[in-house]
Amino acid sequence: MELDDFLYTSAGRGRYACFTGTNRLMFITHRTDKYTELDEVKMVTKGGCTWVQLRMKDNLNLEVAKAVSHFTLFDCDTDCACCLDDDLEMAFKAGIHCVHLGKNDIPVSEAWCRIIEKGQEDLFLVGATANTFEDILRADREGASYIGLGPYRYTETKKNLSPVLGLEGYRKIMDQCREAGLEIPIFAIGGIEFEDIAPLMETGIEGIAVSGAIINAEDPVEETRRFIREINKHKPDPCRDDSEI
Image (tube, rainbow, N blue to C red):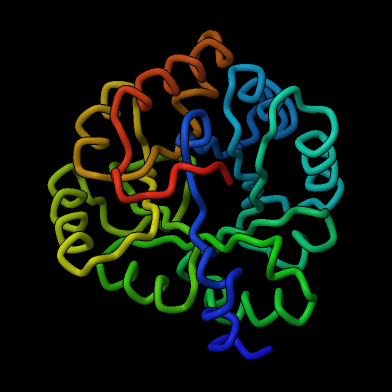
């Protein structure tokens, strides 16, 4: 099946990830001296998070990916979706059915071609990083399932940052998305703290992606719960399907 054909199938038309409730918080792992990636996933899922992205920028490790995948599939008390940052081939090997692609990774369209070759197009989601409206438009045309838009502010958990957007940047880009009729879910990312949630959600984004604000909290489990409660005070776009991932 060719990519253009896939995008018109039921799977292709339904490629947008649907985010409601606890999965409007996307937790992104960041190994520290205190916690491993698996430790972090266990804590945030205990706090109710059901959408985690496994990021291993400095040390891609298949065994870690397999351990996190196994936990989210079989040992987690919640129905948790798992995404792997950057590496599609490792996602295949680890049994993870979502990949998040940065601006320097393979194009979204190329990822879908590999997924279709594997016969896994009914299972997979492909997320994309964006810094501009044009990035979002391109990723959407190539079949992205959701967008991580940022950075909101400077963050030490990610190297080689694109230009910081700030709140006005999000307002402008979300206005452009509405004017263009785009429906792809958009997550804010990059140095976001608890007090940023309300103003960011009011721009029309679907959810918040967080790493350090939860990892560095005194009680990461309770901080996860607090983030979810605050995010869910803000209703998602009423035209969005509210089914789970």
